[in-house]
Length: 428
View (cartoon, rainbow, N blue to C red):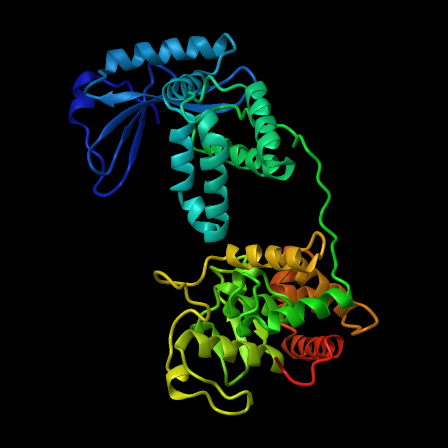
């Protein structure tokens, strides 16, 4: 119940132990003294805008702001609200504009990449987006203040990126800047997003699928990498590239494979959630061909020999090895994920295979599995690809069936199909 506050009362009043207390003033409607559980005292004003919206305006702390001063500020704010303004919104706008006039786009980008939101994305996404910022956006925009950057200037910047690096890169850079400014809006650094406009360049999704003859040629070329053919491709990278085709997994996931993800008892590979694109752990049944290739990669990683027979136990040195299946030659961790992409480009160029990329292997495998050649159902292929299941979120929560048996059968059938296409009499 409101009460007639006095200077003495405000000075001596204390909150109940461990509780927050709010005391309303009967002299100025909406004025409140808020007592924190730690003994702090804060003045605030509850009011309605002309449209009827309820709002609260913080006036200041006691004793820096006395009772008389708090009443004066409250009366001024109420008069402003009656005239159609929104004092709390105006203060927020003034604060944001002050921040935007002082801080730069670089400051916002650094805050964005260091935020908890960035930690929730995959490391690959963060590397890609930070690279786009560093290489294409920062040289042009880093030192601009947030308030001074206009939409037309962002469009001009995106066009410059397109001229230098292509339309697709320009669209990606535009999307990164849009996300950076949206983060700034959420954090109340800016009110408007100058990058909020439709992408300037339309690009068609790739639909490249390798022919059977191209797969045969690629497979034969990868198979002789260990004999020193002048491919510019090492044997481990050739194995990783073949695994992209055999398992249908992304090049970055294959090249980052770790022994901790492999279960030889169940003959499975589980890609950790922090490495998968959709942030879900992904179970990949290993066909006989996949096992053969991984065993060979482990032999190279440990500088040892492994029996060709996948039923034979692994040598002790290999079995006890814990680390990347495709270790970097220099430094720790796995080989850089772009190595497979570059290797695929070199091989396609040497073989005169036009417009082929590492990701096209995944698309080719999925297309051929769905064709009459294999006849695998689309739902099973989607699970192998680790695509997000169709349907409502509620349906996805209850449909936890992993299709493990179906995935294993499909991948074994696909491995056999590769053997027939490449005329392989044995696993190579």
